[in-house]
Image 1 (cartoon, rainbow, N blue to C red):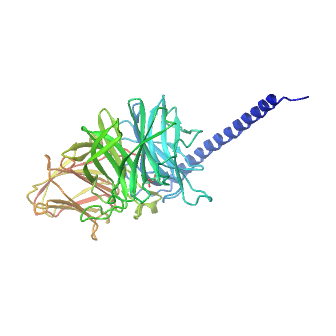
Image 2 (cartoon, rainbow, N blue to C red):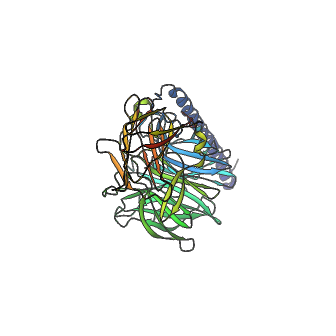
Image 3 (cartoon, helix red, strand yellow):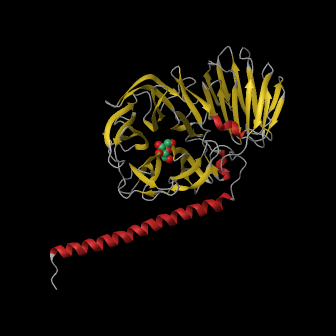
Amino acid sequence: MKITNDKMILRVGVVFVALFAIVNTKSVNNYENAKHEVEEYILNKKKEINLQYKLHYHVTPPVGWMNDPNGFSHVNGEYHLFYQFYPYDSVWGPMHWGHVASPDLVHWKQLPTALIPEDEQCFSGSAFSYDDKMVLMYTGRRVSEEDPYFNETQYLAFSDDGINFYKYDGNPVLSMTPNNAADFRDPKVWQHGDYYYVILGSKTDDERGRVLLYRSKDVINWEFLSVLGESKGDLGYMWECPDFFELDGKFVLLMSPQGVEPEGDRYKNIYQTGYIIGDFDYETFEFKPEVEFQELDFGHDYYAASTTENDGRRYVIAWFNTWEIVHPEAEDGWAGAMTIVREMKLVNNRILMTPVADMVSLREEPGTQKELQPNENMQFGKTVEIIVDADLNQKIELQLDGVEGGGQVWLRWDPEVGKVVVDRGSDDIRQVEWEPLGSHSWRIFLDASSLELFCGEGEVVFSSRVYPLGGWKLRNLSPQTVNITAYNLQTSAPL
Ligand code: FRU
């Protein structure tokens, strides 16, 4: 029998489609198996975790390692938070995306691991809805023998239920930087008018951090628009985890630059997170900076902050750690945490951060009220909110300690210097000027290995990890009596 060319082409086509379907089903099955294996591993490994430092109302990894918040979003009436996750050790490794969700940004439930690395590691990115689906856009980072350096391009994954995600067959969807920079990561997507916009962290040929802007109508085909921002040489060699949003009538470019030199009290952490305020035009795609870079948080452990918006409110969360430091909890089988969620406001050219309103729902009533005399102590459990009212015309010094040792940290105010100080001892000090806009109170959030200090209306905020044994002890070392209101806080994050 003679087979015509057309028939031959048809048969080859049919065989190819059938083969593709088999291979594809196989890879889908492999991926499903891999997902089951991860969940089973997590479930078993969790039994071995030492919970002494595990945070109770901050998101932490169930086991293993956590870094940046990813895909912080409000989709179908629920807040989602994903995170850079390596389940198999409490150090950084091939990146997965962990996943938790919340109705109120305070109570979090654990969901199955959302992304598992295959040929690509699943680096940071964002989440949004498109066409009734939830979409993740993330950086696929590949390293191969032919290309010993690395290659970063942007991938998509879709979900119908906000829990199970499947990777898009046509990945990557965005691989082009204007200067072919290898560093091209951490997509942050938002919708405006008919378009989806994305910004990405990258660098110039002469190693200056920059942020690139693209747009798309179908989230598959992306068009380069502009360099949204760029270091002039004084703001580091790489800008990671960019975010861009309107806040109280201005535009804010938030990012985490690497390579900024320390300058007096500023930039004492290894890497920074901060923002530039300016104006933006959706016709020219030009961002005009108006206020210079400022740090967002003044504590020891704060990086890769990321925001989301709902009902006109802008919320921010960050990795409650940073790179290249010791993570004491790693010995316990886990490492890394998220800060509590904060609401942002722009006042007098700076961002104020206050704990998200529903944090008060964690308070165990009744609280305790006490006029704490100089040198007097108070003791608390592992999780407590302490509100401090004192006379700012006099010095304040509060010492925090673990009831059974460890966790020593001093909080100070000196009216002559006008700075708030968070001192972890051995010269490990962070300090910054504070001019209260209204309230003179301090709100201190303590968890099993963390301290967050909010001054006044959130003009100055410090996030620092500290490691007490047992509960917390507070001693008033001030020359004045300070007024303390304290509430034990309930557990609201998966342990
Ligand atoms: C920021 C970062 C990102 C990257 C991710 C990798 O901390 O370096 O730029 O996507 O972590 O885990």
